[in-house]
Length: 241
Image (cartoon, rainbow, N blue to C red):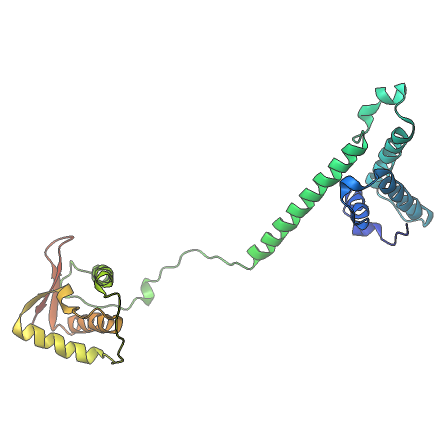
């Protein structure tokens, strides 16, 4: 069997043995390991004839395989039985198992390397203080913050979602903030005091958003007062005009 490979391509003797097994294109349990051992020894011998430095671990494996080959050919001697601990591979089955185990570790290493490469594409940073970018919206009542109003808005959205009909007919009609401001003014002329959610009578996304922004705009211009009697109470809207 011709072998045209270089020793620098292998991480160690087990890597070379795994290559020799795969080059047969057979299942490892169907391979005669004597052939693999022979190919390994021929490869090491070729490198030495070419005056190529061979790592000590490759030579150690070669001596182990020579010992194993002799056992497979002539069986154990008393002297070998007493010196078995000198060799890590004691049988053909042992050699197969070590190659299989090595392949598993090699595949796991490839997976870990791939994960490492992916991790290099992820950049993290410590949390930043975004308060400097916050657009301040003044609310008349100091005890009621914009966060309180946003939370009320989100809760309102959930309730509106459950009220939506299963079948709807979609019609296109733009709702402007100015239009909602005018409508809210009309409401407050009739009734000076309303609950926040009463202003969202149409369960449609563009309508709800325009209404919310209109309320914020009117609060900022001090047309309305938005307040809450105490925590967890309903938010109320009152006309200041």
